[in-house]
Image 1 (cartoon, rainbow, N blue to C red):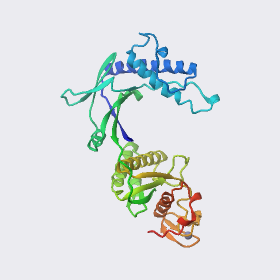
Image 2 (cartoon, helix red, strand yellow; image 1 turned 180 degrees about the vertical axis):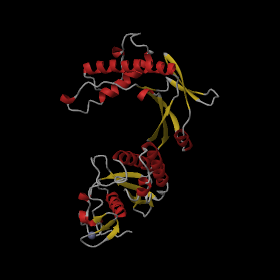
Image 3 (tube, rainbow, N blue to C red; image 1 turned 30 degrees about the horizontal axis):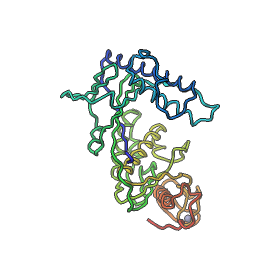
Length: 358
Ligand SMILES: [Zn+2]
């Protein structure tokens, strides 16, 4: 059964002594993963085989239980396998540098101490009690019917200990009825859906009204954007097309590009796409990524595509005079690609030209 996964990262407030103890555990684990990487590398072992006894270091070589050593071996295999995709001469032995440990259900459990804090108990030769508080995201996924999975990750970027929990839920079947729509993530109106829904009008002004205190700005813009996104109703939609910007190096138009710095724009855009992906997954909507090529300059009435047809907020085809809101025009063209089931306007079949919807 296909499963939906959501990750929740929570910091554990540890005092200095405890933090040091966890750090030395993670350092030992890291050493152990690198030990296995060297073994696999010297054998050119890129296979999927599990850790067998010939790969195990002698007892007591690492201050970890044999079971956890095996766990580190599995993690090392993943790291080494990542090199398999590269051409032979470009393969280099990877190093595992992060202070990160992937722990399955044998090594940790939630301990209920009837306290204001929750606890994670980690057992693997070392025993740690790691306090944490359930976050809004934890509660959100729980309320949506997700259950906590048995794998957990400990990580320590920048000297703070985080626990990453994974929540899972069976994925609903894809809808068979409903419309096909396209969504444009632009910078004037944040979100334009081809069925006429628009969210985030005046985002530009909203963002411009902030000063340079970036941390606050991020948080407020994020809240505003996600508040607006939630107003988009996808209940009648069976398939949704969005622009595939993963391969585009510098975007010529896009969310809040002019209003704010590039970092915010990329960050926010990625978060908005992730939000849409998750929403589609939960509602059984097929998500299609299509090429952004010419989607803002294409006229769906006559098939002409010319950069002169697009001027700021207005689309006016220089060929046939067809006029539309620029973002809506883009959303409609994205939808056309979804309807036609093609990636790019280059390969749009002629019968899809002449669409007069909206
Ligand atoms: Zn035209």
